[in-house]
Image (cartoon, rainbow, N blue to C red; front, side):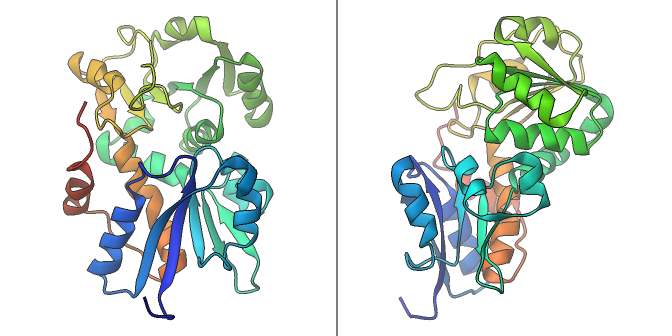
Length: 280
């Protein structure tokens, strides 16, 4: 590899499952850019030192995934969207050499919905979000930005759901785990922002039958490509959006920051990434 090659990476624990390297390398080859993108599995206790010396570790920037997004926010100079979410998933060095961060999970979530369920924000004025971690905050902020009037936030640890209402205001309603099916009655959108349903994890146990006929069900997980939650939604005629579209659309800003060109999300690239992901 030449010394001119610029490299970015995805940092997580674990990270080997990530399709980000395949995606970014496809873009790099497609646009003829001298660059590379890798994965780095970094345990939580080593993460602060790793990003504190990100450039010394050979990187001009990074994507951040579970469980590091909130710590990344604390250890970088976040922009307005990252501050709104309280978590960062994309890092880059500013012209002043400062390690900066943003949160592109918001745009990835909204873009995936726009592609899979056009007009969703007009029909889904009552939404339910499962999960109050970094991904959950990005989902909540995206819904608020698009004008969703009421968002029930459900978390096994109720205090974390309460914290979301305190952070984002009266449109966010903290809801106890045992009440999850009750608030799904009449809901126009359900977003799973937890790892429930991810390969090897328990499934998300919810009753979708009370949702509106034009409701949308979104799952941030993409391994398997169609989680059991999405399969149940599809079987009863609801629209669905999967985590792979979210991954693709959230990646565009990072690529542009690191390599100077905004890439296009194409069917060819989605099919390439989907080819080696278990379907169910």
